[in-house]
Length: 331
Image 1 (cartoon, rainbow, N blue to C red):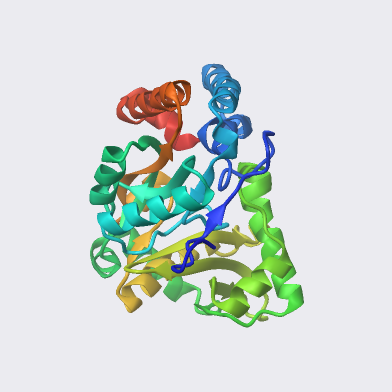
Image 2 (cartoon, one colour; image 1 turned 45 degrees about the horizontal axis):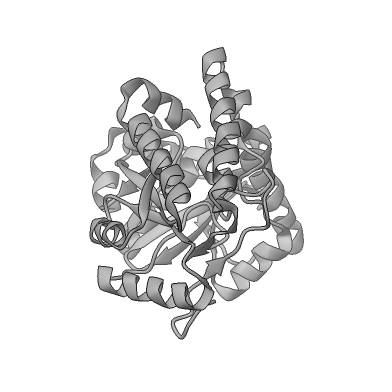
């Protein structure tokens, strides 16, 4: 934590492709794509992802990106920034630069909620690199009432009245172990080893301190067969953790019920929902609006600026090209 305001800051371990993308520019800007090639069916896509990862690692290492501190960072795939004015963000950046040096990065900025901050950071010399497409539901209550797909999900919920779906912050050790296993099966084994990994001890501490809260799906016997870990900051809620028993998915629509529960909870507390990235069609049909998330980087020196400016231009093209955008969304 940094300064009187307690800004969370993370520092990456030196080098290496095995780090989670949440704290490593090398992983976040290229290495993650290489771990997703097993899900790609087209050889050209695989070749592109591997080439990007290898070149990215070399360039980021040469530009000193492995040693950058990340401001406002949290150990979750999705970071919610506090509700800050642009001037306040620049004040925090100046404080951090004085305390730990000027090589800084900030993730979690998107072009739907943070345009004034993005503009101020660009003016202050930061390079804004498009990173991923996320989905925001600005008015979950409206999505609940107007989306045809949500209406279908509500019918499924009524059909499966034997399931209990509720906020649930009291899980015993066996249930926490099961939650970790469900999360890892989905995020680590199915998607990418560079997703953040967690232990039951971490979840226990997160629940105890309120850093995370849980929504769970329990079967008629009371067994947890799915969960979502969520937190709120300012006017937004997000759900950086989700897991479910894949061997029960043919019996119960667990994933759809968990996603519905997120919408309902966000509507109940009156917050926008940051639905993060992935499954774009699913989220768009349920009120999710696409937004582009950025990593803001303050490189020092001509070569680092050239490298990260190149990343910004390349990624911007990838997100605006119809063909490449489909590839990026699958990553």
